Image (cartoon, rainbow, N blue to C red; front, side, top):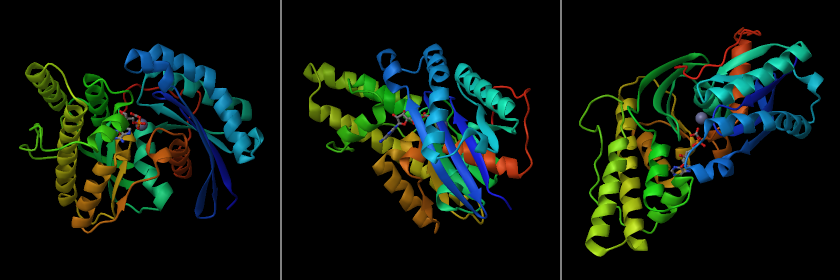
Length: 342
Ligand code: KG4
Ligand code: ZN
């Protein structure tokens, strides 16, 4: 069959992305994958500001599409279909992407495919490692935390997830509590490398409960109490106190995610592997723990390269490509959905 070239757009949170993928025969190649991060725009506010995000997406989408085309060496007329994140996410950003995609699809007279952002993350190990179905996916980012059993390109089963904060959110809040820079994950991980993970006795939320649900907001509160305890004792915190608290926090998060992953794997038959995605999967000590859990279950562990683990448009183009091949076609009535469970 003739090669198929697809353009993907992503704008559901604070990254504006465009990517071009090409299927030739059995192989799918990423021809380009560009992203403009808004981290600096939101830094002063301590979190993503939806209005600022939406405006920045509108400003950057055209530019990202141009860059993706240029890097891929593909003309706009060479695009066969346009895939776009249609949710879940911040509605202003999702709308910006959907409107841009509609404009392109209409102008080119090419098919439009609305993609669930979570499906994009969940299918990434198929793109990067050719992982077969069914596999278990742990999605851990600043906005998401869930276990998914991925049975096929459009067959997902949510086995459990956080009942409050996402782990990335917890890393970011803990960094803020300790005066470390944002995004908090990398800063906490760096500090933790020099700390004693046994110094502070932090809770392991929901380990006493069966199933795959998780909770991280109590852990954050426990870090706040531990911090205030040190300050009350000594009048302030030393670098070592901070490092010990970061290490203890990271150990608690890793313990919980590892144990819940072990249970999730134990509950599923005939899996081909265990995969992670999301920004928190960048954490080296967490990755090492999850790798051991997979090994103990006798399964390969797949952690896609970081640029494809965090929000990106290549994963949207890939999920869109699979949906296109399954016959999905959307039209100008495609709507942007702030909430859209898989
Ligand atoms: O997937 P992502 O780029 O964006 C979404 O949330 O969709 O994830 C960002 C999150 C942030 O909360 C950041 O603090 C966290 O991932 N993160 C980390 C690390 N690097 C990024 N958390 C723990 N350890 C890290 N090394
Ligand atoms: Zn995401």
